[in-house]
Figure 1 (cartoon, rainbow, N blue to C red):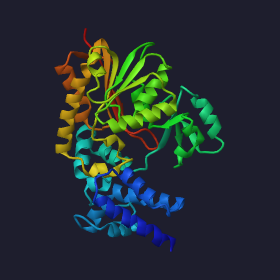
Figure 2: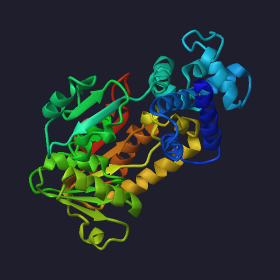
Figure 3: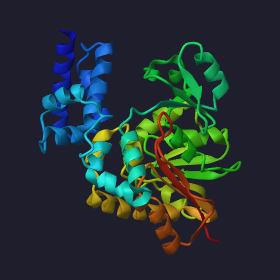
Figure 4: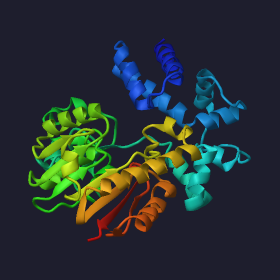
Length: 376
């Protein structure tokens, strides 16, 4: 009876998902919000099944012998299929759990063996990681308050990171409501640390989104200096304002499109962060539906957008100041090749070796970062 209830909602959600454009995580959140009768245990099972079917969709269709199968057929096969004992006559890219395009794109850089391992890894559940808000607490204090109750461990690379070993509703924690931590992947925390301001520096987060990396940077500034958030989406800046207020950040200003301050800040900023729109391939664990949409045309569009954004953002950097180019992509075309393009076409020089993070089991998502200095 209970299984039938879960399956009914699973198929209802997946069929609705096929007809809209939201990312999987947002669509699932909206569905669960609209169906409050689904209990916590069923919600967890529904989410795990939906993600698993989305991750392995192309493999399931290939084994079923259909170009596109029903979710009911995929689910029935998924329950019976041992994904570690697949027939060896299946193409390597099929056994990897990725699309043929994704496998080939990764193979060009890493070779077939590493591409296979990465595709498999991108089909694992994503870790749950938080960043202690150093404006209000320390990692040690947070860790001590949780370690006897929850399975947690400190992150090995991010100095303020703590990783949970199971899925927990962290936004219901009193510590979250008090602004003592933010949910943020370890790799994202490491990218934010590429911005290393001195006392009194001015910083511009040029594609700030809802302010995740701004929050990490602001925590390192201890209230000194000024940080500006710019995004072309005013609604997402509203979300950033709410998050910064909860975190206790008081040295931030919000610059929506056409804000008059944008003109006066040209050639004035010490550090500019450009966390540009990208394929998101380093985060496919979190939204596996994205990998089925990736192709050459998408990457070509993104590469052009990234170059335009970088050019716009560089105009704000003072001579001798620094600009950070960051993606959550695994693709050379969005990472090293873009950095080479910037070095050839703009008055900048590389300040330090590239940051390149590949996703690991239970570890960070994939990220790339390059720090440039604007020539005087």
